[in-house]
Length: 183
Image 1 (cartoon, rainbow, N blue to C red):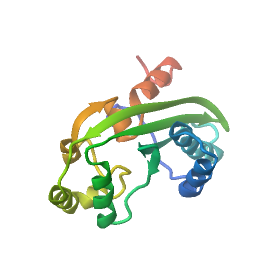
Image 2 (cartoon, rainbow, N blue to C red):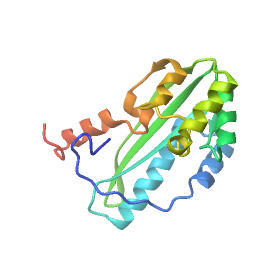
Image 3 (cartoon, one colour):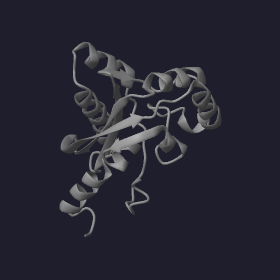
Image 4 (cartoon, rainbow, N blue to C red):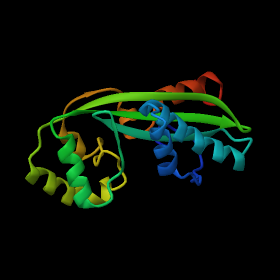
C-alpha cells in the first residue's frame, strides 16, 4: 500500500511474539483496539531500536467476532470452520499503526471497519478456500477484500485500507503534516 502511494520505504521483520502478547492482553481483558495498538507499538519499538534515526511504522490487525478475537487459520480445514463461524454475522477489523523514531512514539492510529458476511453454504466455503488457500492463509479473516474475498460480504462499513491492514489515509496525512511527504 505504501509503495502504491509513492512512499519510499524499506521493510524489516521485528522479532515479536505476537501470540504471547495477544494472549497476555486478552487475559487482562484488554479491548481489541488496545491489543491491535499494543502489537503495532511493539513492532515499531523493536524496529526503532535497530534503526533509531528512521521513522519506523509498526502495524497490526485484529479481527473481533462476537467479542472474541480471531487468529489466522492454521490449515484449510481451520479456514473453512472460521468462515462458517463468520457466515451471516458482522465482524470488526481493527488496524493499528504506530510510528516510532529514536526509541519514542510519535504517532498512532487505530482504524475500525465493520463487515457483514453473507450467509454462506458449506459447499461455497469449501470451494472458496480450496481456490484461494495460498492467498488467504496469512489473513486473519480468511479473505482478501481486494480479491475474490469481496464476494463474501453484503455490507462493508469502513475504510478500504483499514480492511487491508493499515490505516493508510491517516498515516499519509500525518507524514504530509510533518513534512516527510510533500503536498
